[in-house]
Image (cartoon, protein in one colour):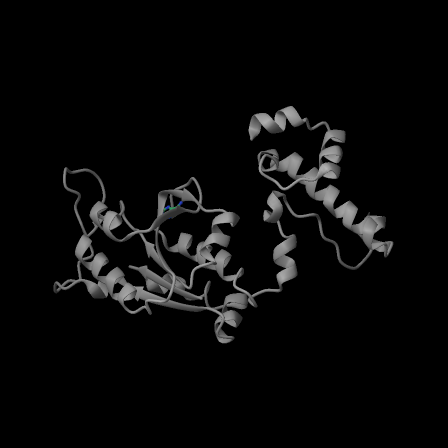
Length: 252
Ligand code: ADE
């Protein structure tokens, strides 16, 4: 899968995208991440990428021409068979989620446009942006960290980047949080590993893990239960913890 990042600060990306799992994925040819400096598309002597807002007010706005030229140059370099999506990073976008990460992983190519200053000229958004994403209800100094979050969350869903089993079991897949994990030693500072995990009984282990997922989700993120995939045994267990179906229907 190809990721193209359009930014005024390409230097921010070295490190996060060139270490660990993403580094291995790139070396294996599973993903490719290209950085494009928007400023190089500005044609004036000073490579001006921003200007004061019409109508006045604080801050600067990313100018239409260099940004549009950068997006078009990168889009133009693509093979027409590729499914491509151009995404703008903005706190005013749809809030990114595991579900959206799965949707994005279905594309061959993502163009991630990092907004900066007060934002981008509205006309570029209208003309060239397919989708707008926010990584949460808080304001960053720019879209760079948001783009890194999205590349990381989407790249790990590309087949072969991490083992398929961990994707199926992790938090948020199936709409519930992950169960707790333990490794050796069996007793650490007087705290024991739950006996069922040492029992070797696979059925019991699976049941315990499912119940822990439900218990944690109810305690920490009951909002997730409204859209989680739950079976009759899950409902019974949740009810035994004081959760009610009426509550669930109200949330849904
Ligand atoms: N740019 C500034 N804040 C952001 C956020 N929360 N998500 C995406 N892009 C941003």
